[in-house]
Length: 116
Image (cartoon, rainbow, N blue to C red; front, top):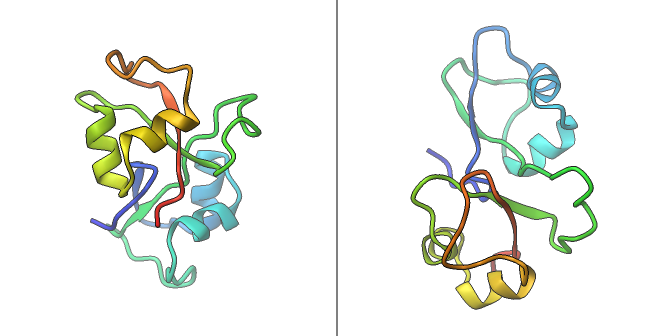
């Protein structure tokens, strides 16, 4: 499975195109292409796993300067998230001063630093 900063994946189904996928997830095709560097939009394969863009919470687009989000899943910790995306807990907390690092909630959306 490809590395996916959003942690959101989609398995290509028969008849899928990037445009159809973009309609299913309500995001522009360009966002899907950005989430999948090197993807050939004209050669999607049934069963191919692609990375979906991060969820942008309603009204939160300007509160995350990096534009990179993570939706908390069962079992996630800040340490696990930081390790997965190649950053530190301190950097995540700096971008999310309102979260309780000891009480992440499934479905909670947090802002991530840009890796690198």
